[in-house]
Image (tube, rainbow, N blue to C red):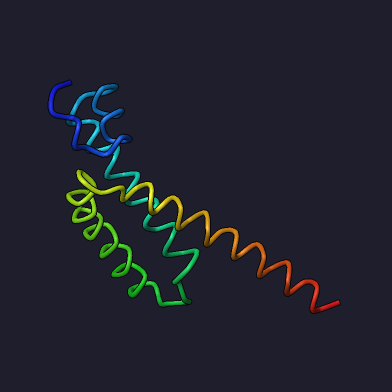
Length: 102
């Protein structure tokens, strides 16, 4: 497809596979899910139900801005790396706590 040379590689592959409309929807859903996953791994605290709803709505709306930025920047790839690093950190922290309890 013409004009995809400036688009993120993942988004370009989605556009080639399913078309522009569905590609943008799928890409936005990936952004939302990765944003929620990174938030839960690294920053989430015990909040009341109402505050949780506000946080998740903010993440969903904020991912629209990330969608706009992701046409030129590797936002999804960065969120994936952040999730990977935070996941490794959580696993190591859990292992360290188990060792210190013994």
